[in-house]
Length: 385
Image (cartoon, rainbow, N blue to C red; front, side, top):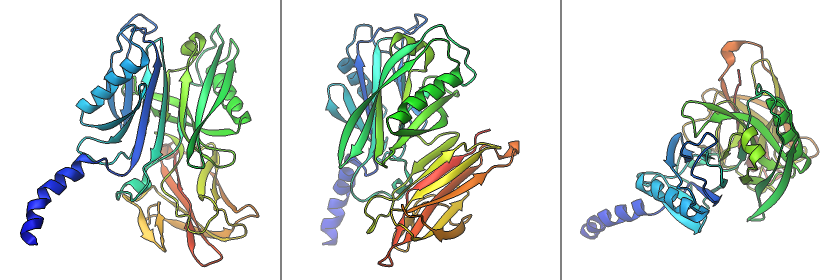
């Protein structure tokens, strides 16, 4: 038996390396016909950044979406990623170089005047590798102009397609965005967020790394859940000429921001009627006010709110669930959930500049009527300056 196992071991290791690791799928799709140039006539670029590592191609003028997508997939494969083709316009990244799991989402952008983009993220069902329970497996966003951007003499009308996971299926919901001419950057941010909220999509304004400009930062409206708690897993944008002048042509999915708040991790549902989850409402910035809200699914339940200075290196198994906050710096607070099963905790941040970038993480644990512990997803916060 030992001899047989020793002979099979190299084969088994090679097989394991060839199979996609459990973790996340990040899917990228491009459509339209490449113009081959950007707004100043320079060769255009298509870039996707995963975990801060960018993979870029230069689309050839006249190339249709499937040709551009195939070229981008080939660039990822050449860099060592594992991929799977979904349709002529879309492929998914299933493992990082070396065969490890994908545990970070994508920032996806183009400078091409003829291309539109969409991206999605979802967790692969089944047992997760040790780091994957902390990964952000939801949320998608669109880049916004800087708040200080000067008014432009153009308006825009464009569609945002939001991909929502409902009952195990991905459903695309279209929201038409209208921007009048003469709006400042901040007014454009407000207008886009307001129009999406009218359709039940609530988001956080966060800051991420710009995939098209190394070292630069972008303002993004990141949508994580619908008003009813359904997971948002992707967005698609077709920018009209006005939108290409007013907005950075970047979208993202599953992004842990440089500044701002985000939901992350795997909940421990046990007997809850729906997935328990957490969110941040308000402005997590120096001198700002925000509220951590835990949707536990248990009305009038005994709830323990945990907040810590960040996340642990990997999920910690405790009381039949997964702890998603750092136990070494964790502070606990107990209370009862409201009639809807919600527990919230407000935070007022002092106006101290040295607090910028401080990372916090929060999660709730509730004792259900059968004496089982239910754990929400985590919510992370990096204070904005």
